[in-house]
Each structure stands twice: as C-alpha cells, then as structure tokens.
Length: 284
Length: 284
Image 1 (cartoon, helix red, strand yellow):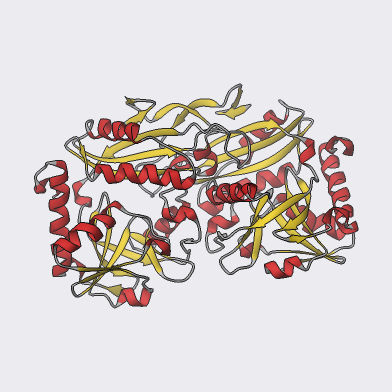
Image 2: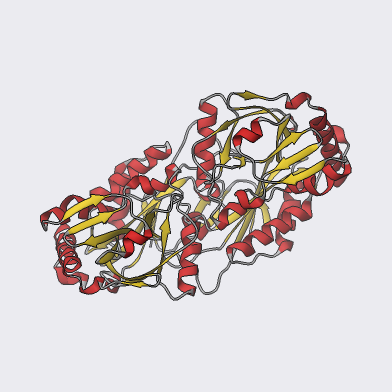
C-alpha cells in the first residue's frame, strides 16, 4: 500500500518527478516503523527523528503529514512494516538545491511478520567501513548501497546481516540495526559519533528499559575484539525489536539464553505492546 | 527533456514505482555526458562505464538503450548536459534485491552552457572523507548526499566546489570532478583505489592527451600538502572539461596561466570537437 500526495493508493506506481533529488542524489531520508492494530510503535519518536533528520540535511518537513501517512498505513494492515520517505524535492541540474525547496513525502506499508521479532541473527563483520566523518552517518538517508552490498555478501557467506566498523576500526552498527554488548549487568553500545544511526529502539533501551531493569548503560566505543568478549550481543531495530546475536564472524555467543537479554526482550515487548494498546502475545 | 520507457517526454513527471530501489536505497548509478550538435562526446566510454558500473553493483544493463536515450536527448538540444540513470528496479521490502531484477533506465537533458568549459574554480578541502573502502566509491552511484552537503559548505564559504580526501587523508577528488596536479612536465592524479571515480575525461587525459603532448603521467597518492606544492592544479569532468583550479583553501595557484594547463586544455578541446564533428569554437 502506498500513501502519496495525501491519500492511500493501491499500487506502488504514481506520477513522480524523475528529477527528484532523492532519486538523483540520495538527497532525502526515511524511517521504518512498526504498526500494530492501527497504531505506530513509539510514534512520536519516529516522527521527531524524521523531522530532525531533515533539519540536519538542511530542509524542513512538517510532522503532521508524517503522522497522517503512518496512521493511514497502520490502519490499512493489522501488522505493518511502514516505511516513510522524504526528499528535498526536485531541482535544477547539478548539486545545488533550488532556491525554494519543496520536499516530497511518501510512505509504504508491507505486512509485518511477527516471526521477525526477537529472532536470533548471525552477523558478518565486513571490510567496507561506515563513514562516521559524514553528517549522513547520523541520518537514515536514502543512500543505503553499502548496506545493500554488505547484506548480499553476508548472505552469500551464510550470515544474516553485515556488521560495520567505522573508519577508525570501531564497531558502529549492523546493516539494519544498532548493536549492544552485554557485560554482566552492563549494556554497552557505540556512541552516535562512531557513525551510528540514532535508533528508536536503541534510545528506548538506553533511556527507559535498561534503567527500569536496574542495568547500567554505557555509550562508548567498542573494538571488534572488545565486542567478542561480551557475554551476549543484541541487535535492535523497529521491526526485529531485539535480536539475540548468535555469532559475529567465527565467534559464537549464548545471547539467546542470556538472562539479561531475556529480561530486556521481555521488557521491550511489554513497552511495545503497551504503546499500541495490544496484548504482548501480538508480538509472538 | 526526459527520456523514459523508450521515448522522449516533454516534462520530468512520469509514472514511477515508488518502491524503486534507486529511490529507496540509492541502489543505482548515473552518468553525465556532453551532447554537441546531436552527438555525445566520448560516447562509447560513457556507455561502457555505465554498463561496467552496474556490473560492479551486481546487475546488468544493456548498452543499446543507453545509447538510444543519450542520442535522442542530444538530438533535442544543440548543446546538452545529459544525465543517464539506471537503478536495480523495484523489489520487496528490505535490502535484498528481488530474484528477478528488472533494471530501470531514464535520462534527462538540460541546456549546456559553454561558459562552463575551461572556467577556473576555487576548491575548499572539507572535513568529510570519501570512503574508499566502499565499492561505491568507484561507481557514480545515486548516493551523492556527501557531495551535496560539501558543495553547500563550499559555496557558503566563498568557494565553487569541495575537495575530498579519503579516510587515509589522501586527496581523492572534487565533488564533481577528478583532480590532476601539474609538476613541470608531469601530471599526477590519485589512483582509483584512493576513492576516485573513473572519470571519462580523466581517462582521456591519462591515456591519450598527455602522452600525445609528451607529458609524463603518474597515478599516485597525493597528500593535500603535496598537492599544494604543484605548479598548477586542474579539475576534469564531462561538462567543465578541464577547469584550472585557482585556489585550494588558502593556497593560490597560477593554473589558468600555466603553459602545460593551456596545452592540455587546447588538446582536450580539439579532441572533444573532433569526437563530435564540430568546430572547436563550439566550446567557447
């Protein structure tokens, strides 16, 4: 299902300006959110991140149409993976934006499979680095080609996802999620400055869930070697919620049976269900 | 003017799949070429680079429709800046391409202003690094957001273009062109492995023009400090052809009056004119 120009449309094809800067230059950003029974999980955080991300790129989008698009799509499917996109709109030839920027917004929904939630993953550290020197590293921009190619490499080698280090060699994130290492009662996650997207679930865990469970949290740089010393590793994103990481390259982890991981997953599941007013079993 | 689905169309708006991977993930590439009096400058090199770039990204495009699009656009304007785009087409939600990839091709043309050719430029070295660890660094992919933001920064600070170093600190390229340093009778340009796009004019100078003038050529890494020691610096791309660089940050160069630069510009102008069967004055 597509939401474009203020309304739902059945198919994905619509009249579109083929000089749109999102299409030609990757000059735009997106968000992925989970819709459950007509409501968006952590809706305000998703809307605020899109608005803030556009501001970081130098253009302005309004929160209300974003909310309208997400809600219309969530109402169209009981369990929805919702992708909302915004570009700087079209402009003249070349890199410079037009004087009057007219952003373009659209969103799509696909059925969300609850089997994605909390399912374990195997990560392959890849050679390509995440470029933390770029403003774009902190924004979910449309430029995902490195993640596409790295995911392909991971699949070919029998893994589920790629793990990216940054240009300084520090662990940054997975192709489609943030990473946490569990050391006893402490959660460690790379700081945003290491080339990390400000994940919605990441923030939820750091700011609310971990403290509510009495777990210490640290945002600090992690080498791959330090990560491999962890008791458990988890990946978080808005569709997988919290995935126990089984292996990072050749290193295995008992993440799926780690009691701290279990407590985090249970608390996150409750928070998600509560946020949408659904039973926690909806996520199973 | 737009070429899409096999024909010219007057405006830029056309029915387009808003789940196209080029739009959602930057999963595609493009080419910029100059059309003069109905012909494409260095046509076969442009076509071959697009085909090879797609292959590098893991999908296949045919040369014939590319040629058809470029030629139709060149025939529509006496002097045309032609941008040809190809994406991996649409696919299901997520990063993985569909089993059957159906690439999408389109191209646009804008009037080319001959004042662009051989005009001097001022370059600002920027902090964001070009990520030479990415396969995408060697392909003209749709992900140009770093170049967009860096060009904005350069303009705000009174420069024309950004100069990128790579993650190792070596000079890579400008936002929209390759760089050469002139040391006496020797031309030095960073190797492709330093995160450099394989420019069509770059190759023409390295392989034909410099040798024809008896100039030595070296592809080797250049620090910013080494670049600043050059007698002259030039930027090359398909629309500017060969731009003498007046300043790199605070360092000035007499590039516009350097005799080697003048010989290169004259020889390139002749090669371009010959390739299109036009008088060399067409470029002035």
